Length: 115
Image (cartoon, rainbow, N blue to C red; front, top):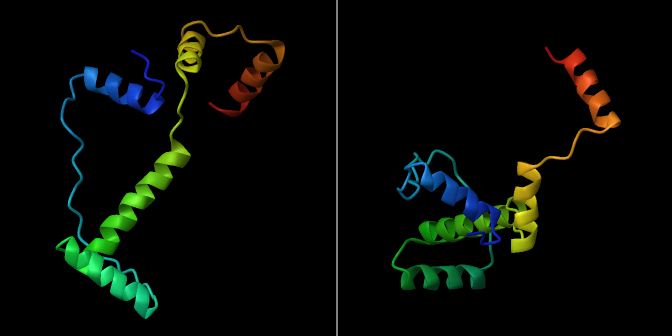
């Protein structure tokens, strides 16, 4: 079952809990503006691409910018593991190492400060 992708495994675990629906993106009111300046050549390119995609330039730019932003965020926030590393991760969760003296002292300090 390990695919090497922790995010995918987390989604699979979530789906096993009975949530078989695709994620729903809520429709939010567009209440902020984003102003972008570009040269004429870029504008002509965006106009042409938006026309080919049958949407306004604003919709085209926003949709593509959001897709790219999601990709960048995913690349920085997701952890991808090889199958061997994923198996080692699961093993570490199942059989954690005993606390060493330094960790035990850290637990004691934490207990004193957090109540």
